[in-house]
View 1 (cartoon, rainbow, N blue to C red):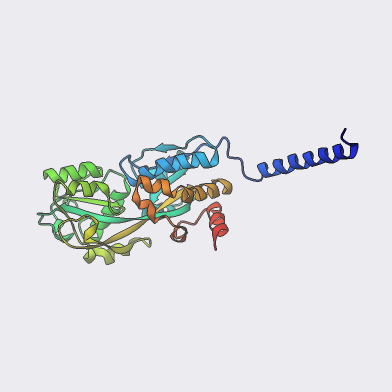
View 2 (view 1 turned 30 degrees about the horizontal axis):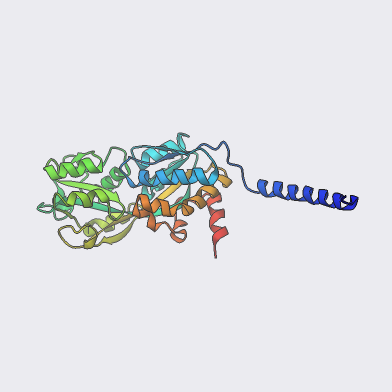
Length: 317
């Protein structure tokens, strides 16, 4: 028979282990019942491609139902949904986010991370007479879907190129794939697109219709004055194997945006989950290779959410 003292000590040890187990189980936030909606652009875009594996990763990491990935018209629509309470997380081009943040609307925007950069593409057929933005006058140009982030930046490009006056160019509002088909058939003369390198649709179309990119170095100084987030860069000739050499163009960062009303615990968990999910995001689109904690904090003029900031401070070496 066990001695009474041994039984008492064993019982006390069991109680201690149960108590410690309970404390460990309760040390992290409980996300059960959390429902998220991600505003992710059109289903052929990079945002939408990245949102799918990110949604699955967040569901597994947080133990929640899979967040809804919503198809939208682009960055302006994404941020409108976020501020109106129709979405909880939004992908957005930095210039659209900056313009939106400058308005008095509430709730205010907060960033989880800078994720990757978009490069402005001015695409024409290889035999096109369009050599610069100045020679685009009088031509038909597709600038993306109405109210898309591409349309926003295209209009700024026209303004910097003195092509904003009625009739200076004929604007078509088509998605990228439809734009490239119209370019190949001769229905339009140019396509303006802002996307990661390489943009798959452009690479594929070049296999059927020889394309080239237009250098916009001459109008970049004016463009750079329009928004503090804009930068210049070069698209190497080897990126697409298009006709012509490298071109100088505009670079626009992309942010993962939430509302200031999101709890710090949720924002921190989503930010951590973004980096944990990177390998799966890369499988969906190679632009996710650019996701890195160092540039991720560079989200000016959108402030980092306090929860995201808590995560970055935690992992700081």
